[in-house]
Length: 278
Ligand code: PAF
Image (cartoon, rainbow, N blue to C red; front, side, top):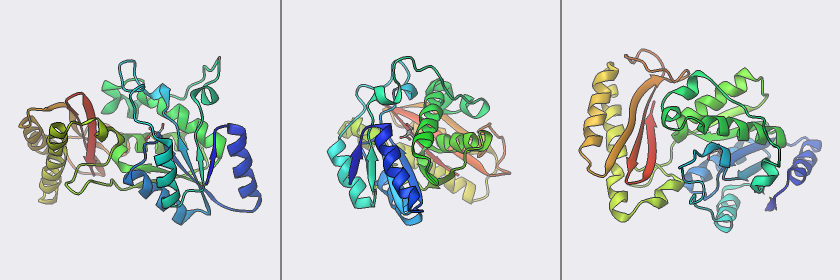
């Protein structure tokens, strides 16, 4: 397993692979890898000759009062997960490597980023689009892999690739859950034992919403109401949003008459967790 910290090194490695005609998959991550990330790496290893995993806690996607400093980091653990899942190289740059002195160019997006997480985190997607673009330009992979847990992020990246004519195939991979249903997230480590129990309410709410849709309910208002009711019954939970939106544009819809995304963001104590179904 190659672990490199500079743009020059990663470009050289990819350049050698490309000279041999090998295909390259990129799995962008912020590290503290779990089974969700492993599933992305495994998928990338199936579809490409070589896999690069970037491990970079990207400062530009965190708001001022968010968890940039406390975000969990453990490179040794990440190396193990990456190796087991079939990764070939970890790109682990320092913030100064990605954002050197004088950096002032950003990639921004309208419409899709103004809904859902974009309301509470108004600068988040600008940071995500910027770093993902940089990673695309540095690695120039054939395919890039993102989890469906961050469904809005996936929709934003698909839109960015389309709008900016980026010749990379974007692959979305299914949500991986704990045995009791909680979606895997590096932020789950913030939860106290009591909060961890309470966090299950997200899955309960998602399951109830899904059930209603399967039984034929099409009215977004009714589905949202049921999902909200379940979340509200948990004293440790504070709702950020419960919404049903068009799967491509992220704009709210009143009826399920097209591909949709039902998404929730909920604070359990101080930890903000997200989940969805579509
Ligand atoms: O999903 C994440 O972990 C991050 O938003 C990403 C895509 C690695 C960009 O920093």
